[in-house]
Structure formats: C-alpha cells, structure tokens
Amino acid sequence: MDTIKVILIGLVLLIFLSSAALSHKVNLFAYTEDGMVYTESYFSDGRKVMNSTVEVFDAKKNKLLLTGKTDKNGEFSFKIPQATGLRIVLTASMGHKNDYLLSEDEVRDALGMVKTSEKSLPESVEREKKETFPKSMTQIYDSRLEFLIEQAVEKKTAPIMRKLIKIEKQIQKPSLQEILGGIGYILGLMGIGIYFKYKSKR
Amino acid sequence: MHISEGILSAPVLLTGVILTAGGVSLGLKKMDYERIPEVAVLTSAFFVASLIHVPIGPSSAHLVLNGLMGLLLGWIAFPAILVGLALQALLFQFGGLTSLCVNAFNMAFPAVVSFYLFRLFNRKYNRYTLIFSGFLCGVIGILGSAFLVALSLVTTGEAFLTAAKLIVIAHLPVMIIEGGITAAAVVSLNKVRPELLTRKVKI
Image (cartoon, rainbow over all chains, first blue to last red; front, side, top):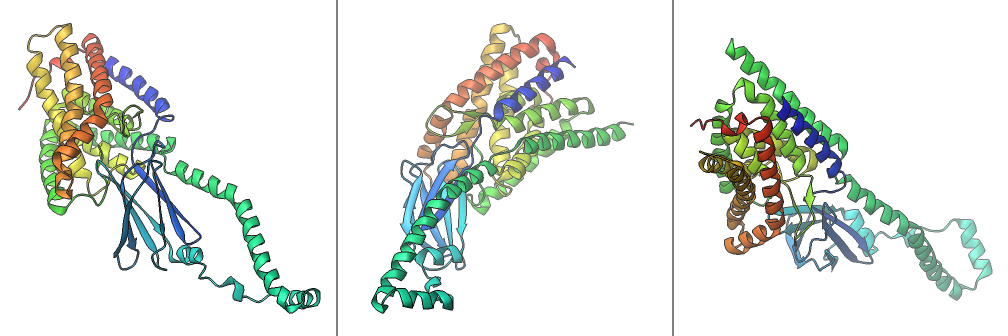
C-alpha cells in the first residue's frame, strides 16, 4: 500500500499546485460599442491568443460574414456588418476552438437602432423645458443632455464592465469543487469495477 | 493536446471511436480485480495533471502524465485515459465530448508504446536504465501525442509538418518536465514496490 500512499500524497499536492496554475482551453469574450464589436481571447491561464482566425457568422442563417485575425494582444475588432445576432468563432492553433454569441438585442443596441429618443419625456418636464428655453435651444439641449448622460453612464458602468469580464474569466476556470468532484467520480467507478470483478471471481 | 469540439471531420472522429473502443476493450480484459485501485489512483493523477500548466514556451501547455500511466498500466491506460478525459471534458470543458475518443487515442496509444519500450530497456535493469527509460517514456508520451494530434488535424487543412512542428515546439518544456517526473516516479517505485515495474508483459 506504500505506493498508493505516495501517489495519494502527490495527488493532494497536485491539487494545491493547480489552484494557482491553470491549463489550456481558449476563451473568447466579445462586447459592442459604438457600432463596433470588440473581441478578446485568451487561454484559460490568461495568456493571449495571438494571430488566430476569428470568423463571424450570422447566428440564425449560419452564413459567414467576415473573418479576421487576432493581434498580439489577442484582440480583434470589426464594424458590425448587419443587425442580427452574431456568432463569433475563434480557431486557435493545435485544435483549440471556442465561440461567443452576441444577441440581436446587443447588436441593435450598439448600432443605436433601439430608438430611445422616441420615448417622449414626461409632460411636466416637456412644459418646463419649453418655459426655460426657446424652441431652437431645446434641440441643442436634448442632444447635449443625451451626450452628457451617456458619458456619465459609461463612466459609472466601466468598472462594473471590467468586474464582469473578470468574473466571466473566473467562472471559466475549473473550481476546487469540480476537481474534487472528478476524483470522486473516479473513486465511484473504482467501486463499480471492484463490485463486478469481485462477483465474477466467485 | 485536447482537440476541441467541432474541429475534426466525421471520418476522423469515427476512426478515433473505433481505435479507442479496441484499446479500451483490450484494457478492460487485462484489468484484474487486484489492479483496480491502482488504476483509479493513476486515473485521478491524470485527471488533475492537466490542470498543471507549464508556463514556459510559446503556447499554453500542461502536464499529461500519459508516459507514466502507460509504463505502469500498459493497455489499461486506454480505459483510464478515456475516463480521465471524459471527466475533464465534462467538468473543465477541456476538449469536447465528440472529440473525446480521438483525444483518448492520441494520448493512450503513446502510453501503450512506452509500456513496451520500458520493458525492452529493463530486461536486466539497474538504476541507470531505470532513470534513462523512465525519462524516455515521459518524453515519448508527449512526443507521440503531439504527432498524433498533428495527424488528426491534417484533415482540417493544417499542413502536417507545420502543425507537428508547432505542437512539438510548444510541448518541449512539458516533455522535459514529464521525462523528469516519470524518471523520478520510476526510481521511487523501484524502491517501494519493485514488482509494479517488473510485471510481465501480457499479450
């Protein structure tokens, strides 16, 4: 039983080592901004995926829309080709592949096709606006205000966005539960194996 | 080393299924009652080893330990690696379920090769042949897998030589580390349980 003990101790060590160092699978993450789609790709240890093919498909019709290559930061950006859902597929070397789905809503949002400006302001605000500003100025007031609000919102949400990307990266890493769970499955299979072999021996 | 879902074509996947099924059935036949715990422990080691990333070299590579599994388990490496890979695919999303059998063959076949190689070198063995052949088996495990992965990727349009070169270069540091680990494991096993290493080759 000495060997088994040695290997078991090794196994425990491996688990602790592995929490710091992780292995390989490619991840792809995409977000939209101002009519552009930005993609980031990295191996699950955080290393950037350089010079790999990115293909963009129409999510519904599965039609290839455009292709490109990631730069040395693992990034690739492109202008939104059409207002449908987009499936972005990354093919890295050595048989690694992953994809990311941008929903139609997100794409439309980025193109500014959701017409928020059509929603009218509450009547009281409308009246106040008319009283305070002459008509020619309300238009400037509107667009200026929209710009300011957008800027403020962006400033406030940027840290949240970063946090989200970080969380997404973390989710993709194997957790301790998954590692222990896998070992549990193997021990379970061992039990099953022993059960059947034992019966057949008698 | 793990080929992802949706890369390989159907004929390659099917070939993988057939070859792996053959290896697994042979392995299960050879798996005696007494050996099951040993197989399970080595499978767990294989399952966890893929999480140990080797941060040297141009690409992302990790330990595989198929050389060590092979020289201890022989054909039983097939079922063991298949189980390990299935759990890696399900829990860590390494590789994919459709490419499972191809991946299993790519890793298990070099393992079986290292089993015979190890016995070839150790008909009469001493400390040095053990260290040398242990190191060699660790290297062969990775090198063989790298070639088989390149071969599997040929049908996807990646030229064999370029792909093979890329994969081998990416795994050079892993090869050396695995060689060292395997050699160290063999030497320490020779001290505590020498019968594991001299086990007869059953064909």
